[in-house]
Image 1 (cartoon, rainbow, N blue to C red):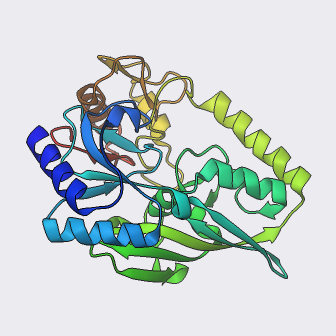
Image 2 (image 1 turned 45 degrees about the vertical axis):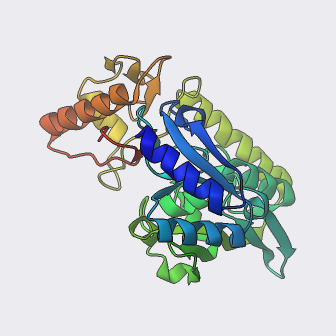
Length: 310
């Protein structure tokens, strides 16, 4: 693993103008797991296109990482070059329209900050996202949602770069959005930006709604411990994975430093020294136990990064 990491860093350092670093994934992921990886931050679409063209020509794999939620990173590290978006790829342009607001938003924009700014400006439609950790690009990739709303509801189009560095703008009608899914999960693309329309709302009411949602999340979720958010998808519209896990008697079940949260069973928390193997093993135990108890096979919402942990 270290040889492939050093090889990738050497190639990229010689041919790419941006800063190339080797970082520990535990510093970049919400579960606080993960070993070494090459990391590059792209600050413009042109810079990102050059990077993707280079990785394609050199046969170097990559992984786009936002705030590191919904990801279980291997403590052994990963061969993939970690790409993060900043600068011009993490900005929001606000424009008033007759009906409300038109936005152009970079894929690296932090979703909670965007939601808070929308509420303060009186732009309705994003209050539900105020406590969802992650970037807008990751939210679109997963079609993140809460409280009956999803990020796809307000989108007009999504702009992506493919693995060769070519640009494509996809209208929302062609994004194949579903529950925690989109076409981008089947493609080797990076979401660089979106266009979004929001209706006009009352800033005071929207801020109040945002505070209410944050309060609900603090009461419901184990936010005092490192976690990656919901581990499993809903197996059906009215079927709660947390309820299935609780009914299987798994609240508080632990492997090493990983534990099924006693507050919300669809969260696995790092109580302090959980390894990626601890978390992966506990995920497998939960999946198998729920299937044995209910006949329902849960599907992970998280993604795996690095080898040997699935």
